[in-house]
Image 1: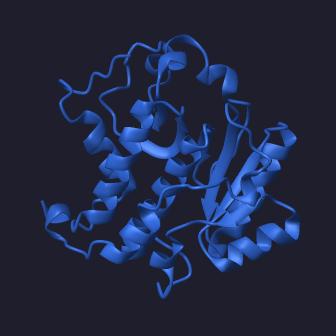
Image 2 (image 1 turned 90 degrees about the horizontal axis):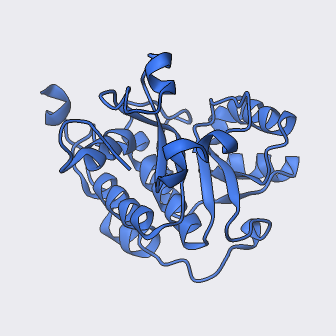
Length: 237
């Protein structure tokens, strides 16, 4: 397949060692408002998608979704969030995005793959803090607090929950693997700080950072890792 043939450089080994594999030794001041055991609503963004972030924040505010956090992928987004009083920090590993050329990162850009390594590293740090993040892309709008839904049925037993590209609403609502044949979409994720989740994050982050396949961005890597060793696409608790 053409998508497998296109190559790109892996993340620099120095960045992997110094930033992406650095252990969380203390809780950053910017995350002091989050306590172990709490759920944290998170999105990630560069300054180029500021309008998306404003909408995300407004939907969270209307539903009183708290606590919240915006992971800044560049200085512009960091300064914007600080000016608005929004909890934020420049995420570790963001140096891979410096000198990226275009300010808006599209799916076909080399920087898009690198962005996935920063995202996975931050999720990993949150799990080490004992926090259960609910993570979404910046273009997501919350219409209802998802926590009751995430804690119902077999979802309450999961180490991780992920959205899919499924458009079969009746099959999806039955919670019986009706949409398990469809690709997972990492635009909405919920991780619980279990050992299984932590091990998965390390594997996921490493796959994205070290692969030289240009297509191996965070979402394809998530799908490949999740289905390794699983018969068909049936994932059971």
